Length: 238
Image (tube, rainbow, N blue to C red):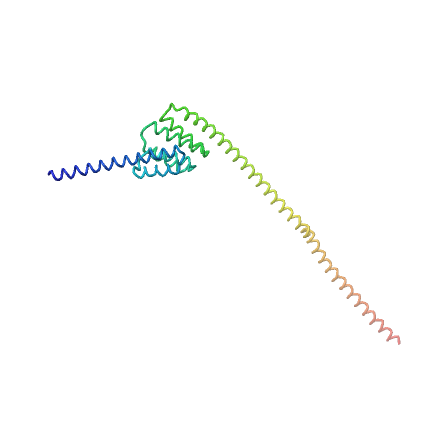
């Protein structure tokens, strides 16, 4: 390698080193400024500086953790948990991981997601088993989770019972409506046997009428015959 190329390589390495140092300095400056603003409760401005630090170093777990803290102070729970989660994927230091999981558990507990809170506190204790505050929070979250599950089961049983009672009421109502319709129909229409009786009565009336008409014709024929006979006799007697 010639002296010229060695010089160029030296300049490149030096430039990279200088750039890296400047980036680290910028990151630290943003974090420090963000911390001051956070301590002054100027959370929006603190958030801006932590995000600038992440622009310089996207893998800065310190910036992620601090950003999560300032977001939680602004009630941006979902975004804060996302920052803690990303930090937990990168961070290797156990004490820092314990803090990350502890804060995650606090946010889950605040939103009554006790199941997730319990898991977060357990992860925190795996990284720092001596943290009594986390141990207390875990016990509390476990009790709240148990109470929540019992209430959910009670509410579910009540809902199922109410739905069953409503179905029974609806069924009884349908049965009553059907019975009312049947009773109404029975009142409006005579029974089948009565219809048959009516039909038979009509046939009997027709037969009786035919019989009467036949008898009347027979009587008329007899009268007419007698008249002829009598007429004959009168004519003969004359």
